[in-house]
Length: 462
Ligand SMILES: Cc1cc2nc3c(=O)[nH]c(=O)nc-3n(C[C@H](O)[C@H](O)[C@H](O)COP(=O)(O)OP(=O)(O)OC[C@H]3O[C@@H](n4cnc5c(N)ncnc54)[C@H](O)[C@@H]3O)c2cc1C
Image (cartoon, protein in one colour):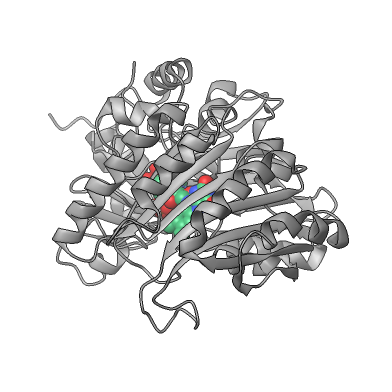
């Protein structure tokens, strides 16, 4: 009975971990496990604050030897389910970003936010494919494909990934790219955190410093006119024009500038990567479609990209949801406005957005991946703040009603990054085509047969 087997837990002692190893009740535990989205309360049995790849390898070997389920959190932007058992590895201490200006690449560690990458890349005249908030983590976002602000021009963030370093649930540190462990490389680009914990990735960067960007705010009451113009205008745009139409019900918070504070607005967000004069010309039909309240569109440094969508900067209890739409015919606009438009009293969905897809977002990658949103023309997204249990109930009702009503115009799928709270296995499966979902389950059975990575938006091994 005293013989030590190869995978006894003692060989992979948690005491070897350099970062904090915390249990419920320990000082610092609550801060360690709490992320940006405050709607779930995480209560894992153990929290490991990884300081580097070694810590992740040790924690994963221990988890494998003890058959302990594992979750990972960088920023908690995607925290939409409670982690109530097992081991949570946090990567917030791993924020290194190294730029290779000659190769035009960034090597990005597990806990880096987009802000860290943009700041490191900008001095070299380079940029990266972040989303609407540079506070989001690079790895979580990119593993879900990553729908960038500049997506129509450059494609998905995962299209630019050259290689990844990942610890699979058996505790092995692996390097993967198009030529090494291609199934792993496939699954990590669009398949989210199903097959391992990524410790770093190498991504191509773009030679880009300045764009024409900002947002045009109109009265909420003009939503119908604007949306009709938007639906006619967007199909005429070249891929250098990246836009989104949003209905915004802004709370009366001091952090929101006047005159927008506490109001209901229609907004068109703009990011144009071409010549400025040409961009201004292309904007004319939407700019003149209704009286504008605020218009911030101007030449800007790409590092100021957060100013385009003005996403909330402080942690809050949020509920998001999404759907991919095939097109936006007049009936779809009518249906959309019936659910969330100006005539709907007390609509609890604070942000309802239609992002224009197509362009480079419709182009397949040279190396096959698990991104399943290339066939959509628009991306429908909602965000609500769960300020009370009553609000939470109203949000669920409004979210469900909107998606049911818009279903006839949808591809039937969601995007894993913004799917919102992971429901049943069949609900989660909607983030992929049946073919990709089944391949993901097979790949998971190779790399995670014991289903240690079972939290959140994951699939079960085939
Ligand atoms: C304000 C806001 C704006 C957003 N805008 C966009 C957008 O424009 N486009 C878009 O595509 N998405 C967007 N998102 C969604 C975002 O991509 C997801 O929330 C994503 O999960 C964030 O990653 P994270 O690491 O910051 O989050 P976390 O909550 O820390 O992680 C979420 C999940 O990512 C996975 N993950 C994280 N780190 C690792 C790792 N090292 N290895 C393996 N898996 C890992 C895990 O599955 C984890 O559960 C936005 C979210 C917010 C809150």
